[in-house]
Image (cartoon, rainbow, N blue to C red; front, top):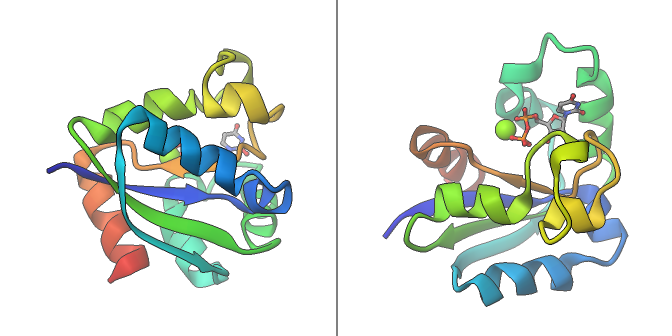
Length: 132
Ligand code: UDP
Ligand code: MG
């Protein structure tokens, strides 16, 4: 069965939205097969966000992602990688429609509640990165 890496970001935890977001994943019919709370190091974040390391927002992204604990998950289901990206909503906050997690709970492209792998290749790498 297909698996993806999902991470509830520090703003999700700080705003008391863990239950709400986990509930949406479960209600969709996906299965949470691993879950842990952790605080991320700058080293692992520089790996995880290497694709945006040259962007102006990168230093702010590092601070944000280290501002508190995250909840890391492996989520399983048919077509779950693309499916979770749809449940999350797109990166650009204006495009994240109501009904999606980002559309309902985030009002910023930067502080956007949730991470989800964007392809089978990144899902495999990210699951290894955070769960070994
Ligand atoms: N991000 C940002 N400003 C932008 C684009 C991205 O602060 O203009 C942050 C945001 O937290 C996003 C993360 O960088 O989730 C990684 O960007 P990516 O393009 O991988 O978006 P995602 O896959 O999270 O939708
Ligand atoms: Mg991404």
